[in-house]
Length: 231
Image (cartoon, rainbow, N blue to C red; front, side, top):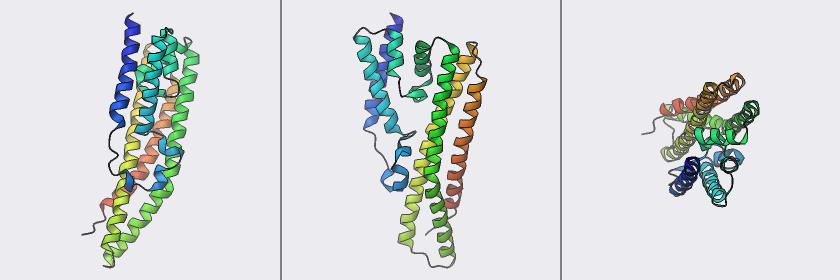
């Protein structure tokens, strides 16, 4: 009974959190370069994608339980497609319910974290052209400022978009780091249970490197941006 109540509580909280967050404002997202916000990579590590998954999982889990489904099956089916973004404990419980065999479970973890790494790579690839263009714009503005030929109105608009691009990508990086942290937490919990997690840790380190590479690119643009002053 306690386990059932726990599952129902989790499902209800997922629905409520998703609904509460769904109306949040997008801030200055309209200023972001369209090349970043269009395409499949735009949904990776985004709040809207997580909310949709959370609401779907919550409703699915509740329906399954209310219709008399088995607790383990409901936990596993509700989390399908959401991955570690649903939270370490929820994801871990769902996989333990679905795979009693630790080796099978580890293979699923590795598959899912490799998917996360591919998603980071997709965001990085989609961002490269935009970041390169931003660097070129900043270099041009620097030269114009030195030569006193800068068009202040145009420069202000260009800098506004660059600022929005940096904020947009930093938000994604923050979510990526949260996913990495969840993977490390899951690995630690499985290790404590006696599971050999060396292969999983190798994949986590690969994910970390990919996130760090993207962050380095964004930081380079941010540093260049901070040096440009249009009064």
